[in-house]
Amino acid sequence: MLRAAPALMVILLVIPVLLGLAAVVLPAFGYLPVLGLTDPGLSVWRELLEVPGIGHSVALSLAAGVITPMLALLLVMLFLAAVSGTRWARIMRQLVAPLLAVPHAAAAFGLAFLIAPSGLALRLLSPELSGWQRPPDLLILNDPLGLSMMAGLVLKEIPFLLLMALAVLPQLQADQRVAMARTLGYRPVYAWLWTVAPALYPLLRLPLFAVIAFASATVDVALILGPSLPPPLSVRIVGWFADSDLTTRMLASAAALLQLTVTLSAIAIWLIAERLLKPLLRQLSLRGIRRRGQATVNFIGRSTLLVTLGTLMLSLLVLCLQAFAGLWRFPDNLPTAWTIQHWQSVGSVLNTPLGNTLLLGLTSVLFTVALVLAALEYESRRGLAPQRLLWAIYIPLLVPQVAFLYGLTLMLEQLRWQPGLLVVGFAHCLFVLPYVYLTLADPYRRLDPRWQQLAATLGASPMRVWWRIKLPLLLAPIATACAVGFAVSIGQYLATLLTGAGRVSTLTTEAVALASGGTRGPIVVWALMQTLLPMLGFALALALPRIIWRHRKAMRGSLT
Image 1 (cartoon, rainbow, N blue to C red):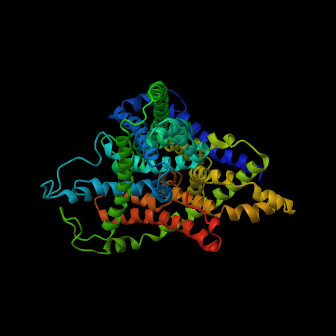
Image 2 (image 1 turned 45 degrees about the vertical axis):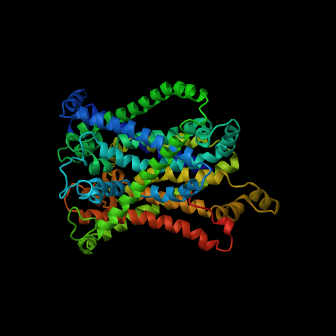
């Protein structure tokens, strides 16, 4: 079984993506025998290029795919340089995983209620500082340039990049690098930037490509915060796929390939910019800047990321306030009345989405954690290079979901697989598995091998060592991986919508479906429930090792 685990992982991660991409190629060129269309050509592409506003939609997706990772990476690097070796770094290690648990849709809703013209941010400034007695006529949400959408993406991608950076930093011996640079007169911030950052960046390249792919093809965040006339390309693809006119599926197929091209173009732009900036950064480091401007860089690094993460936490606070808010006139800072009516209004329809969400999350986590543990144990016993699985792990994250999930859905329809929980659960595993592997791989590989060597000298078999030694020692990382995977499953919108054909409702699909409505109360309840479940998962991940190993402090581990 252990020998089959790595191959099964590759099959599960690669084959559905390739089949999904292959399934959209022929319809994109007008070949769809089911509808009697057997004469391939370029008419579908001509029709796509003539769609009003298609150029603006492509530009929005491309801009989001380049600007979002650039800002997130800059903030993460400056913050790590500013807090390296301080108590802030230890605090952030405890906060980053729970912040990562917040689903994209919930974070987008919270940000929308925070920065809207009638949101909490302007209420705190009014009327004393702004003079506004009524909400200003400002186009903040759904702006044509997609700025609010990019802000929402940056808020969510920073915890992901920060978690990836914290996971690989122990490999770089950052403290020793900084100490060596300090002996040459460099201040701590510059010592980190000139010695650790160049070694850290190559290890973050694949996570950055995953951020580019998600940002350029996001659907749920675009529906909540993005422009609507015209929307980003990914939103248009979903609309064409859901159209009752089946001939629009060819248009959706062509647009899916166009979305893949946009994402690859964003990655190409990133690589070109990387080549152009590399000699400039090298020249800057060779100038030997040791002290000048260190205080300014230190302040920017700490303040900008703290403000960003503070905004995310404030957005969650706004969701909590809105969930129980009654009458709340502008510019009052707090509601004048409190109510549970919002919860009562959705209570009757909450059971099915909640049950589906829990079932999909738990089953996908149990399956993927078992598979990852088997693959890592096989890797440990055989001494295989971990890079062999790395590209396979990232493939579902690097390819736009809207491109291959749409094709995968077409193929499942042709195979007459009925949309349901089983198909949706399989789709969730495609995205849960990479995060579980990335969360668990580093702690598994860093486990002190002397424990198993000692057990082997006492006559224990490899399986007994794995069951009685390794798993208990890795209880905290395994619990954290389960919490991360559960959070990823809860946040899956497009995978649930497309593979479930709209028949499988979850907390995320219901919340995003209400985004176009004007009633805040039900939206907030769904978004808050979508947030509370991952938070509960991380609370259990933190509490379980402390309860089981209450008499063995060293085995409790941490969340990251």
